[in-house]
Image 1: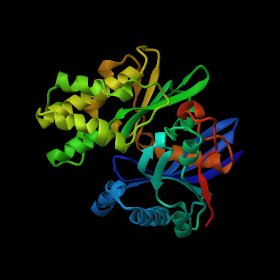
Image 2 (image 1 turned 180 degrees about the horizontal axis):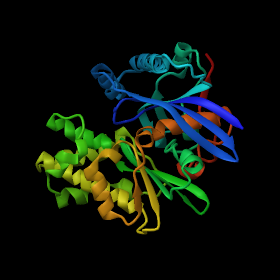
Image 3 (image 1 turned 180 degrees about the vertical axis):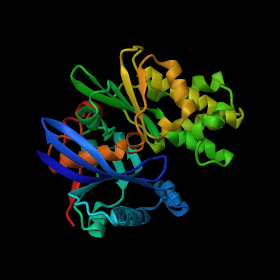
Image 4 (image 1 turned 120 degrees about the vertical axis):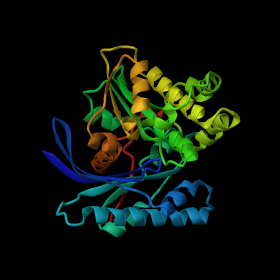
Length: 351
């Protein structure tokens, strides 16, 4: 039986914090996992500002931030492991996405793997998206291989993070795509009320749906594209926020309308069949109002797992991507990304 103890690290577009999870993976006929330790390190105001403004930096300053963030991740791992005696085989770090424009063969996740390896003294795997993009793929979503091999008991896996995405089997192939913006836009609108996020959807619940705005959002070109397809911060700024800013309705109504839009797009992605199960994870799983709206709009059985899976599934799966890469096995599916072939993606950094 093969066994690995791996740290998985994820920094999402919604800037909730740095997710660190320590997992054990074993393989005997199939892959199994257990989560041994987990923690989210909230970003300081300084780090939130640095990461939020990274896309506007000049090349030299962005290169410096890439190194600094890698060192920060490494130091965070050392703090995470303090007073433990776990033997770590390696670290698998997603980094933080600054640019994602696969149509230009460009994707950039900062958080230098060399810095992580040098700081921790632990072999580190990073840069999981670039090879797929070079092969003509979207470089996203990457989580579906984990859905396929670790969560196969569910018909659909939906993660509601900065963006909502979905993964499922069809005709013996794993398919997946980004559905729509989620926490990244909800948090953006909540900040106009002086809140970092809309707890339980209370702010949005106080508003009314504006049909005119809802129709404009639902008609955004992206939703008519066939998959594979993926979303990034640049798309949000250019194609989504501009529509919101052109509307003169009250802020509560904008927020309420965006909730309706997210719930509608997620429900459209699910089959209208009560025999299908859908696992929902990510921070959005805690948003009672959003989940209520999704319940109302689909017949699929919605399953909300325990806290460890809700909050750390993505970090867990990046740890698993590291295991597959370490063994030179496929961890990026062309059926999901549209690349010319499957690949074993990620750069290995020795300490």
